[in-house]
Length: 202
Image 1 (cartoon, rainbow, N blue to C red):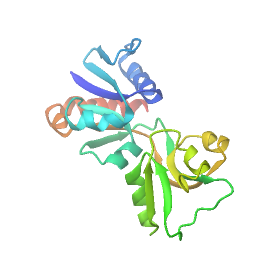
Image 2: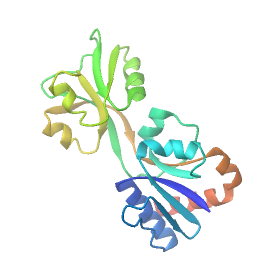
Image 3: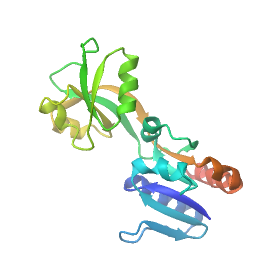
Image 4: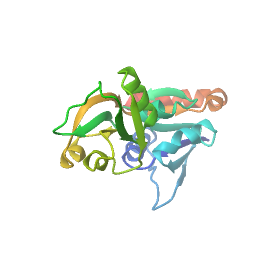
């Protein structure tokens, strides 16, 4: 049995579609259920940010998670494959009438990704004060809470609708297949076989 942690939402749907194609089984979470067992697989339905914790601690053998989450948290896992789904960009956003000033004495940046943000601005030698928010991040520059935001952007529509623009793209992100290090030793053949099958359909 291989246990797989999937993030809630579109990436889970896209991942299950890949499994349906490979194994010709229905692989579908019933209403509000958080565990799905079928064939040799058990899927766990969890928050994107929590996937590394499930995989690192061995509650799941493998997981599917965004590269942005991997770069933010740097969990001790094996990165097996870029699935090419759930694509987005991590961007710096500012009010559309402003310019991003890397020479500022200090920028206030609102984000749910403090490590990615800190590393990016450190590379520009720009001091930042990070304001950690968990949602509605676009609001921060509009009310003077922050000079800029760092957030994931798919189309940029939410930023535009809120009077913001993308000032800089920090990184591209997509969903990656990751594995627990111990599981990779004890279930190596099954995990590698699964990786090859997934690679074959993506």
